[in-house]
Amino acid sequence: MDVVFLLDRSGSINTSNYQIMKNFTAEVVNSFQVAENLVHFGLAQFSEDPEDGFYLNQHYNQKIIVDKILRLSYMGGGTRLGKALHFVKKYFSPLRGSRSDVPQTLVVFSDGDSEDDVEDAGDDLRRSRIDVLAVAIGNVFDVQLLQITGDPRKIINVGNVEDLPGFKKKVVDAICKKNDEPKDNPDVDPDTNCNIDIAIGFDISGDRAFSVPLFRLVSPLQEIVRSVSTVSDLCCSASVKTRISFSIIDVDGSSLYVTDFETYNEDVLRKVLDFSWSQATFFNSALLKYFNVKLKSKSTAKVKILVIFSDGLDDNVMKLKKESELLRTSGVSALLTVALEDTHASELQTVEFGRGHNYQVPLSISLPSISSTILQHIVSDHAKKPQSSSF
Image 1 (cartoon, rainbow, N blue to C red):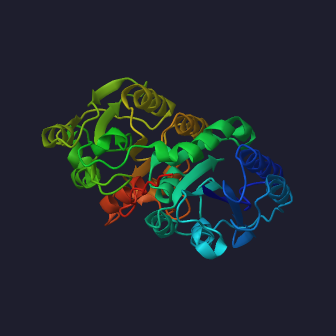
Image 2 (spheres, rainbow, N blue to C red; image 1 turned 135 degrees about the vertical axis):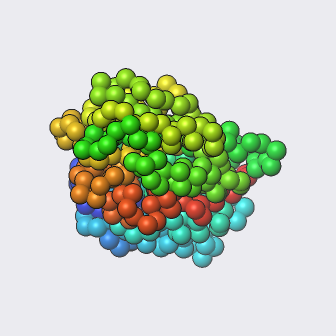
C-alpha cells in the first residue's frame, strides 16, 4: 500500500505536542513492513503554506523514514488545510511513486479548524480513489473533518495530543482494514452506517408574551426543520434522512415537552409549532446537562448535532462552557446556537463548538438564509462517499 502523512505544524499545535505527533507517526511507520515491493510512505507538512517532506518513491528503508520524521522542524503560524490537501494530491501520482495496483491512503493529523475551505480538496482526493483518514487532535471541528474524509467512521477522535500514543493500534488498523469494508450495495439502507440525529431545544426567558404558539416566537422554525430533514451525499451514495427531536426544558432540567428522534413527521412538527408557550425557560447548565444525557441515551447516530434557539445566556458563561465541553467530549459533533434577538447573537457564540473558521458569523433567525446556513453547518452538500480499493 501507499501511505502519505499530512502533519499539522501550525500555531494551534505547540512545540511539545508537535514532538508527540512526530514520535507517533514514526511509531506507526514502525508497525509496517517497508520495502520496495511492500509498503511505501510519503510525508508533507502544513501551516500557512504546505511543505514537502519526502515522496513515496524516495525511501524504502524503515530506519531512514523514521529518522526523516524525527528530524522534521516546527513552523507555527496559520492553518490552511485546504491548500495543503490540494498540494498533497501530487504525492499520489506515478511520478512521485504512487502505484496504481495498491491502495492509496492519506492520513491527516489536524483539529480541522482550517482558515480556508477544505470541502473541494476533500472531494477531489476521494474522487481520485484516495482513502482519507483524519486523526483528530485538540479542539476538534468535526464538520470540516467530515468534509475531508466523507465518512465519520474515518475520523479518529483523539482529543488531547498527550493521549495520541494510546491510539497507535487504532490508526494502524484503520490503515490496514480500510479495504475490509463492504462494497457499495444499493440494497443496503444508507442510514445503517451513515446517520445524523439533530436535537432541537428552545430558551425563551426574556420579556415576551406568553400563551402564544411557538411558531410566533421562532418564526422560521418550520422552514429550518424541513431544510435539515434530508441531507444529500454526506457519506453515502444516497440522501440521508435525518432524525430530529424537539425538547422544551424547564429551569431545573426537567422536560416540559419532548419528542423522540424520528425522521421528518409533519404531524409532530405541527404539534411543536402549535405548542403554547406558557412560562419562561432558561439557557443554563441544566439545559446542556439534559441534552448531554438525552444524546447519550437516545441517539446512536454517527453524527449528533444540537441546535438551541435562544434569547440569551442565563447562567455563568464559564459554567456553560464547561458543560459545552462535556457535550463535545461525549461525542456530539456540534452545538449551534440561533439567536432570537440579534443583540445576543455574539454572546451565544461563546458556548458553541464544531463550526470552524469558515463559519464565524453569528446565527440569528433574522438572517435571510438561516435555513440553508444551518444545513451547511450540519453537512457538506457535495461530500461524496469515498471509493473503496482492493488489494
